[in-house]
Image 1 (tube, protein in one colour):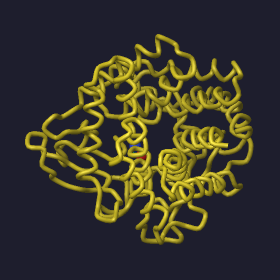
Image 2 (image 1 turned 180 degrees about the vertical axis):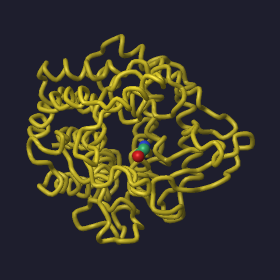
Image 3 (image 1 turned 180 degrees about the horizontal axis):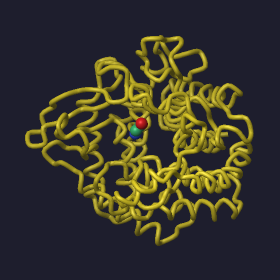
Image 4 (image 1 turned 45 degrees about the horizontal axis):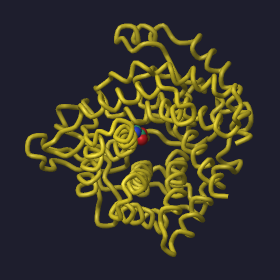
Length: 381
Ligand code: GLY
């Protein structure tokens, strides 16, 4: 945490520099598409420069979320001021119903901000965001629709990543006493549990549904190696999603599902000794395939929580596994050297290898879930 704090302190001049150096082409595109200003860091570009994204990007909430965790750890008002500034850049997203990524964007930023400050404006923004998110609910399918793009391929695609957006709905249900949010979140999780998982408890990335009948049309990948492979970050979203479901509902079937996924991950023959997975468990060039620090951080954060929710003899093995992941990420192999890595904390993540994009780079969500995992560990010891 001390290192993350140092590294992030020097991220702000880097962000100002990236904003000032934006290309004319990028500016014109943003203006033409009415995307608003550049907001927060996402990754580094192939030329080593920092990439900032407009608020609509699914990753825009992770950097402010990370700043909130650093504020929570340090209690230093410097971080509160920075977290507020980088959170409030995202307000317009509360009305953006064209994507399922509302939870990623708004719950990581405004959600952590509201948890730590109780700011009533943040509460209103979060409730509006949740209302916008449920406009994507398809009752005949029993899921929130994920993507609107590639309409020629998919009719109602739902990706495993979407499980993470449900946490915002549980929060909104408690705050408003409106069970609509709760019921949609459960139904989405139940439909996903029925259709996304294979017999070995790994999961598909994309399941496409017929929006009228709810029938499954296709089971595919978009960012993994193959339709039948186990894309590492997809498995990470799955274990995080069902652990969160177990916490929010107290229902044993979600805890059981999270444990099934944990066993798949922990016992997988292609899980390396340092517990930092390759970008896909079935990547063809293992052991030379790139790793994914982001999947590792997401898994570690989830598995720390799982170790607390599970009351069986297996709980200790979960704690040990997550601790080993965090120790690996905190080693010089994965932790950046101070002042390098465009001020991201972790190295060696993989965003979208088949798209030849973000391979072996720092990613804002790797850092977010890493500091979240550290906070969770800190609360255990
Ligand atoms: N949610 C998109 C990704 O994991 O890359």
